Length: 159
Image 1 (cartoon, rainbow, N blue to C red):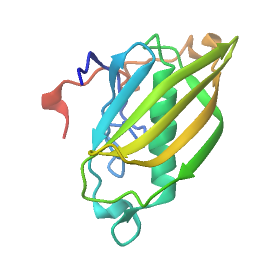
Image 2: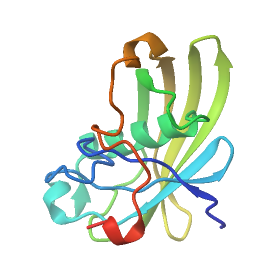
Image 3: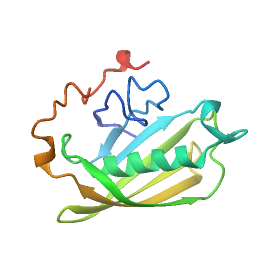
Image 4: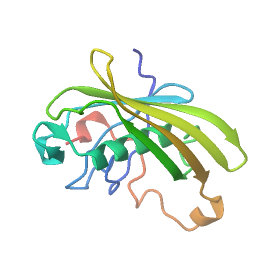
């Protein structure tokens, strides 16, 4: 699969934050407009029970990836209004995995997306349907995105 464009990350986000010591530090790539992915392998610190990632961590990853699928413009911010997660199989720790997000329909400030975590052999381990709301641009007029660390991080900066 061809990854076409790395999406911005931030300093403090739990899922993508580069400086969040407890965070997952996932990097997201656009595959094509409206479709994104991230490859990851999580440490046992994120387990709910031995060998399996905690359901809340799984939900956070699905939420982030689904929302990012709707980030057509890099500085358009949205929040999740509803997240419906289906846990199909245990999501293993210390295993290479991939999460995909796909943008759905858009109706004014409301948009829809879906996401799924897969094993490297294509088995769906968990999936989600999202309802998202645009954050009004007026809420970002005085926000310094650079100070937030909102930018594309180079591979050599990833730690």
